[in-house]
Image (tube, rainbow, N blue to C red; front, top):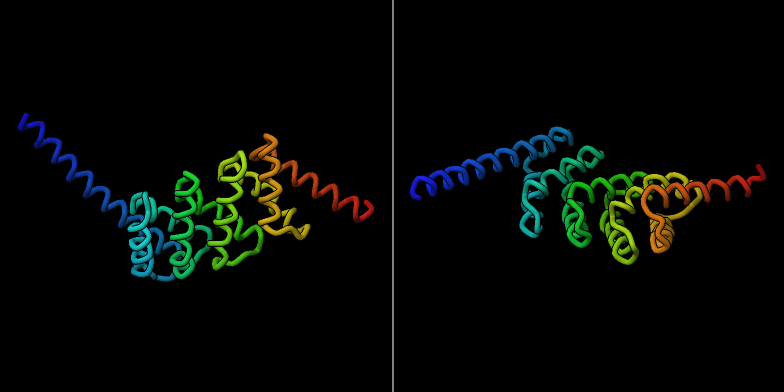
Length: 193
């Protein structure tokens, strides 16, 4: 029994060291992608957010990397982490997935990183008040957002329309494609084509 306990403790220590190394590697990757040499700022933001998050520091660091890949700078990453983490937890979505959906829709609707909290609120409300997940909503928005924006719809209007479709059982790519097609047809009819 003593040998098994020693083996178990050894594995636990090795796992902790490996986890810390992966966390540091993820932070370095984020700083390198961000390109501004702001490792300390990113590390502090991730550490601060990890203290309030139900997830692990590694998951928060992975979220920071996803935001850097989406073109966020260190200031934008720092300002966005808490809201995205809270939104992810409210919808049982992974931090990285919520971050990717937020970044995609900030870009698709021409919003600024400072609009992150508002966008997270819209995504959470649309997902939790309709028969859909944030993943479903993200896929729907991926298809509908470019045409919706060109049509003059806000992200709030678009998400609300998708939520109504979800209540009728139309979700994900089906909802996004249907909305995109409908808006395109309206635009063509209005132009007389």
